[in-house]
Length: 154
Image 1 (cartoon, rainbow, N blue to C red):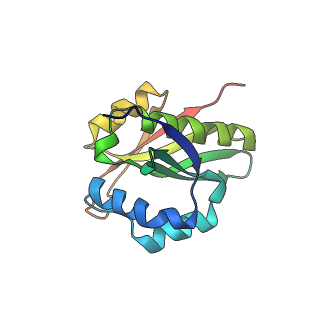
Image 2: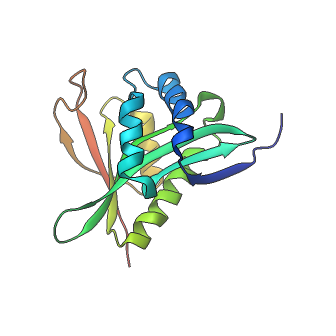
Image 3: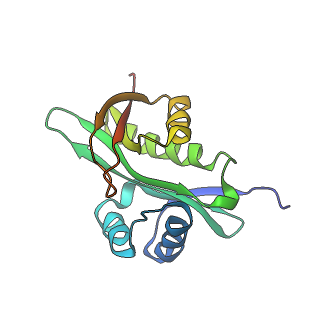
């Protein structure tokens, strides 16, 4: 097996077909191509891909949101292709996004995760995210979401 050569860069419109393919491999309720393109159009500075040996290995789609008295990052979607999972790619994508949020002046980053996805919750905890509250019937199948947040200390 070739060693993992990883590059994290901003997503480009031509990446969308590969991102859609990853979405379909990873999620039971994937985002569609239109939603992914809109996300890239609206938030090009916080939409990153991980590229390994010519393959798109994963992505993170996020926004920096202004809530009036402060800014915070919001991870809307993150996925790593199955053959690249458990290689540190998700962690590197989130770290890159967090750097972008800090540069923009955000005080932290939030995300939503399915209440049943305990593996992802543990992954986020290891990266410093903490449970904030639960949102009832957040997902299309009416599953609850757990909102997690990481605050930056300056």
